Length: 485
Image 1 (tube, rainbow, N blue to C red):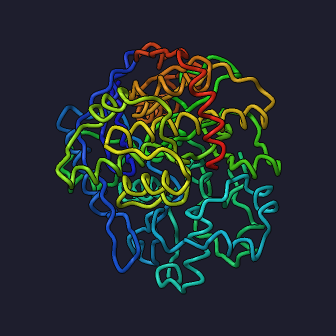
Image 2 (cartoon, rainbow, N blue to C red):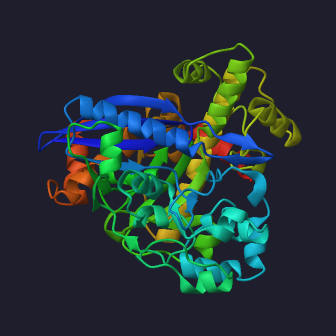
């Protein structure tokens, strides 16, 4: 079988065909493209029509290669598009890093307390959550929101463009702070409290077969083969979690990319005040499972550093950056990667240097020292959040499974094992695409469930293991790290 997955990340997107022989999946990338947001009058937007154009190019390439059995789409969470009465897109969707939601959490607290909202939705308080965006847009009399008849999360928006059908897939909806945790149901309490009209369609289970692309799209692209669209696990992290080679109930997961998403898979949400204060969130996965996780700043910091260095003529690959960082003394330079200044783009190396100066730590003097600072600090942040995860779940974690692009970073994997003091596994690197494809195979009845899907992952990819070698260095550094939080 041939299954097509579109994986839209924060900085790039890919079209990947999964060739499934019944036991393993071989991945074939057929199209890759940049995802570059556009800033207009101080606000940041997704270039959504450009992304749709690239989606169509990927479909054309798949069709020319003999067609596929079906396709599914995953993207980042929270963001959405608004449709008017005529079914047309009213405006480019805001980017979750747009500064217009800067004070959004304070607006939420004016109506419902954090404890009330967390108990109702189970979601951590992030200024970019869908609820925050809607409340700010309403306060600003946003013209698109005032005239909207329908709202669709980004993967659902692409499905609509292709099929003409309006859907709302569970995993992507679970990132919004608008639904009841673990349920295919919006919170009436939240919509009523904030005076918002629910513009989203009814929530559907992950892995719902939507139907074929519309005749108009098929004709426009001159498709020679039928193309079935499945509403896969629309949230990229949910897709990545399905591709984790989970070993048992004491396994923790880390989806490592632009963001580091660290957590566990649970049957029920954890809605305690302690979970809220620790910054944990209850997002949705396959079969309404709970992804109990923490959003930690990830390789975004390195990506932004590289962008600055490229502009300065110091061009290096990510692999070269990691190799150079590995030669730097461990844990000499530390930051809090979740500090507010590292959230926004531009001049990231300078921000790191200034943070070290301000907090009285050693100051990195070159690119590799800056990179080492970021990698060590991320590893220590993982330790901090693993300890919180153990306390909140009552489980003793004995292995961390890293999936996603960051799992290819040997230096960071070694630092993480040293910081945690237990085994770390790395792979698959293409976890999101694999999970997307596996969800589609489950929808088609070709794979039974998540357990069988994870065995297919083990059959399909090399899983590398890392063991701690420098525990003492990282244990001492952790005490310094705590003072930066």
